[in-house]
Structures are given as structure tokens and as C-alpha cells.
Amino acid sequence: MKITNSIRFFLNIVIYTLIVFCLYYLYSPLNEHPNNKTGSSVQFVYQQF
Amino acid sequence: MLPFSSFEFFIIMAIFITIIALSKYFLKSNYYKHLLVALNILFLAVIFPKPYHFISLILFSYFATYIISDIFKFKNKIWGILILLLPMLLVKFDIRFDFYPFKLNNILSFAGLSYASFRIIGYYMDKAPNEKMADFVSYFNFLSFTPTLLIGPIDRFGRFKTSQDIGFLSINSENFIIGWNSLVKGIAFKYIIAELIDRYWMSLYSIESKEILHLANNMYSYYFYLFFDFAGYSFMALGIGKMMGINVPINFTNPFVAVNPQDFWRRFHISLGDWLKDYFFTPLYMFLTRKKSLKKYPITRQNIALILTFLLMGCWNGFQFNYILSGFLFGLFSAVHNTYAIMCKKKGKDVFFGKMNPKIVKIISIFIMFNLVSIALYIFSGKCPL
Image (cartoon, rainbow over all chains, first blue to last red; front, top):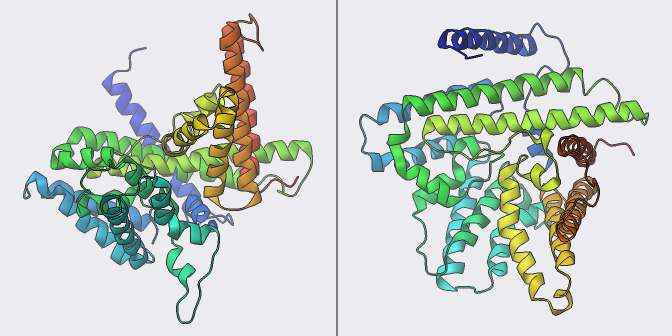
């Protein structure tokens, strides 16, 4: 199926909405998961020193 | 603040990108590198923890490279490498020269030291004996380019300089869109997929559990987590680099479909694999070729060089048993595959799969490779309870 510009535009909107929703879900102060912070690569770097 | 460690970092990068984009209309193209160095210094001095330490390392490596290669002109580069690696070796071996009021290890150990050391060695190895030293501004930019400061990719000076010399010409809407897409991909990988794996998959079972299903769950989840976390970081560095006018090399291209160890290292942490191949494996293999006792055993030479190369990779991560064992395992996988590939070539047929359908062979190879890598990386993680 040929992806036309309008389909691509629509897909972009869906993807960006999903990303924003996920970021809000994961990092919002309302999310009370004990790991509600990130920086895992950075933690790995710190582990080395 | 460390790169990519908080939301504010992205705000700072947005400001940097805006400054570079606007400067395109006010500054001549050859001032690009000066603007870049000003921004890099600003980040190091104001935002990066231990700024003077990093700047001191750049100054030390620049003048040490000049003295070693242009004044003393060491023929054997191993001495030069050891001198340039000295700060990293002191930290990795935890050699302490603490005398009041100085604590040398506290001065030397800072985030990004390992990657900077690899770039420093890369520059020294690439520099021809009679070649003039690079200008200090380009060298400073090469080592301190903000998006790649912390965890690479390990760029090469030649490639970085070529990209830098294009200057403001590479600041255009086309590159901005490529960079933006890469940045969004990196954000999705690192801050969403890796985080979801970490919170809801990796923590399903205790890391101390020795039940086979729990072990398998922890092992596979760690491989996926590591990939999305690290690849996410690399894509973000690539994206921001592109928007700032520097081409950062691609570091990951779907390692889950690798069919053999060689293929895996062309897909996973590509810049480290290339670095080890060019600056360690090849010189070591040439050295072993000159050894009389190994002259008749080319496969043994290759396998020794492969295992030592991956052991070095393990040691580079730290002198801990899990890093060294995982490095050894990767070396062993490569040596076994190398022997198998040479045997297939000699006999003119596949000595293991015979005349099996190539598509099935590919699927089996991917399955084997995926599991071997999962095991080696699980050991690398230090979370394996066995």
C-alpha cells in the first residue's frame, strides 16, 4: 500500500499523541510507581566509578 | 547535570540549536567551530559536574599527544597509548595516590572518562607520524561535543572534522527533520519502551530467584531493556547532533536479527566494535602473525586475537568478574564462529547445517545468536544469581 502524505500525517499524529500520553503516564507525579524517575544509562556510567 | 539525565537538558539543547540556527545568518561559515566550542565550554563549565576535570583531560591529552608524536616521535605506539590511557587506568585499577589535601582518584574519575579516552586513543592512532597536530578548537569540540559527551557513540576525529568543516551549510530544514525524527525515536526507545520494560517486565521476579522460568524472564527482559535504553540514548545523541550540524555515527541497527557474532557487532554498539577492530584486533593479529611459533596456525592466531579483544572490552567496562566473564564469552562465541566459518569455506559446504533450506538456517542462527547474546549480557548485568 502506498503511504500518501495524508496517511503519513495521520500516522504522525497518532504516534506523537501516543508518545506524549506514555511520557505523561510514566513520569507524571500522579504515577506512584517507586521507579518514577529515569536516567538508567546515566546510572550505569556512575556505577563504573 | 549530566547529558540526557533530566528534562532541563533538552531545554538547554533546544537553546543551543536555536543559537546555532540563528548564527547561520550572522556569522561566516568558518566561525561555526568557534561557536560550537563556546557552547561546549558553556555546557562543561556551567552545567556539567566536575567541569575542570574534563577540560584538564582534554588539555593533558592534546599536549601529551603533541609531545609523544611530534617531539619524541615514539615508533612503538604502545608507550603513547599507555601514557594517554593513564588517567583511565588509574581509575579502573583503582590505584590511589591520595595525599592530603589531594585525592587524585576523585580528580580523575568523572562521567564520560572512558569514552573520552577511547576517542583520544583513536585520534593518536589515526595521526600519521609527519601529520600536523589538529587545531585545538577542533580537538576540543571532538572530545567535548555535548550530545556524545557521556556514552558515545565513539566518533573518529576525521569524520567529526569533515562534518564540522561543512559548518553552517549543514544547518537546514532537511537535516533538522532527520535529526528530529531520530530524537523522537530515541525518546520513545529510552524514556518509554526501556522504562516500561524496567518497571513492568524486569521487576516481575526477584533477581535472586534461581527458578529456570524466572531466570529466563530476567535474562530476556534485560537484553531488551539494555538495547532500548542504550539505543535510545544513541538515537537522541544522533538527532541532537544532526540538528546542531554534526553527523554522529549510527550505533545500533536491530541486533535481535543478528545471525552470528560478527553480524551482531555490526548491529550492536557499532562504534565500539569498529574501534576495537581497528585499534586492537588488527594490530594484535599483525603482532601474532610475526610470532614464529604461531606462523603455521592462522586460525589459532585469529581466535587468540578475538578472545583477547573481547576480554579488553570486558575490562573496559570495569575490572569486575561479571564484565570480564561476559567479555570472554563474547570472545569465545566469535572464536567458535570464526573456526566454523573457516571450516565451511575449506570444505565448500556448511559443516553444521549441511544442505538445509537457507531460510530455516537463518531462523535457527538468529535463535541461537539471540540466546547466546542474552546469556552473555545477563552475566554482564551482574544480576545473574548463578
